[in-house]
Image 1: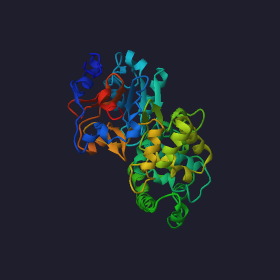
Image 2: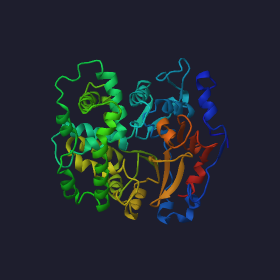
Image 3: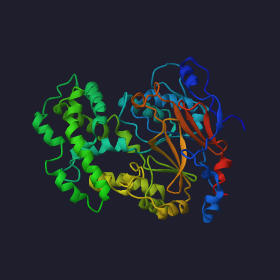
Image 4: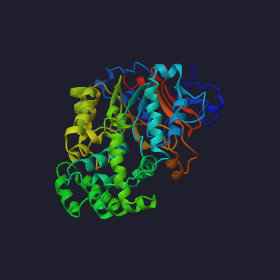
Length: 441
């Protein structure tokens, strides 16, 4: 087999990326904690699915997930995947597409926001791909939608179902607010028409009765575990949110003014980042592969079987526009970018797995589940999952004791199979098309 590792052109601007990227490859490692040995065993696949030949995407896919506001890591990952290059300038925002990049599809697996070092730079790095006319699919991540929920909650009538969404964003959104304030408001008369500190606190925080009323409001929508988890999470964030804002040098008046500016940037038709949520999709099906941020549940599996991905994506945007925020955020649609298959999440059972197989989906490619030693392939709930969140952002890496910014991407192609590139694993992991096909043949 010819080396499946992408060729990075030798250039001074690529030197660090080349030095830190795998230069050799190996068969995908198999052990009980990563790719279980039975992943490749055809006798573990229900017989009625064996006739369903695994279909590969028509064009090569480069999947990069969870860049979390690190444009350096994101652009380095594009270069490491062989779809972009940087020749003229070493700074961010000066990429061009390679021949492979013009032929491939780049799927950004969600969670572009939060953590750091710069949300605005990451957004502009993603936007340059659209300007380069790359084939880009941008998926919804829980951190991305968390911002949207907070902004929409302020813009809509306050009720028990939505009044906690702003503070629910928590400390991870504070760096974005700091960036927006510094870039757009700091040298302006931002304080005009902004209420006083106490009034802003009432506008931003849930009311005193929320903690008593929410469990009854959520009954029937969330599991008992989900309600308990939500209330405990809000007790913590309600207590600490203002403290985190003050630590970043932001008063609640400044936070409120910044939230208004963020509404203009992200939600208004002429806003600089209006494209971000407008272009976002919930799921993308390519051959037998389903790309999403987190995971599935029974209801979403049935929706995909009966109506397909176009319907699911249209429902995603339609619900955001028309439905109340509570029933959207705790629905099966939002579970797709939030679930970790916990007791608090909407369940995926054998019924859902059967439906997803009938829909012609045999491999789920996801972000959301952080892996420190590169990508992982595993059977979860009876369904093959490729876990592709490999800790790219420098903030998380520092917290986890990892070096510098991350570099990596997951490549999916019929000729080479699934390739896991990560600067945190010494070799590229390769599962050939023949090996993966063995499950369904």
